[in-house]
Image (cartoon, rainbow, N blue to C red; front, top):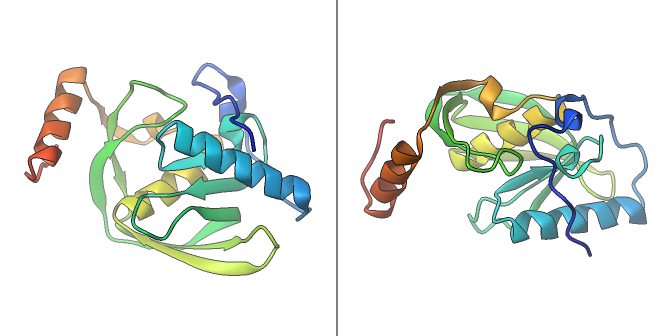
Length: 170
């Protein structure tokens, strides 16, 4: 496994549309393993292949809910409902945070590393992560969907409120 370089906002690849995966082989497995290691080293909850310079429809997600790292290949949202509004950041836009509206619940159809199709479901943070990472596959960044960019002071306040167990409506 290897840590890959995460592309940042000024890299034009982040605005490109990723291509479907058609080969389910050892190379794909290596890409998934590298993405997992890269995401974990960066303390992220999700990573799209385009963020490491690969224009392929691949994402990994781990929101720390006990379900482990989810690998989604050629993913598509098949159902979305409800609404949540919350703080969002991105490994490709370090030190930028914004308030973004996302669905509260999503169902995603995607392939596994062996090519089998399966359904993934998420609520709250997992739904947010699925939507955020799938946006990357179509060249969209969270700042394209933001309601409001947050200042450093607002980010600190929200983090302190979360740590202290208070609900916030940013």
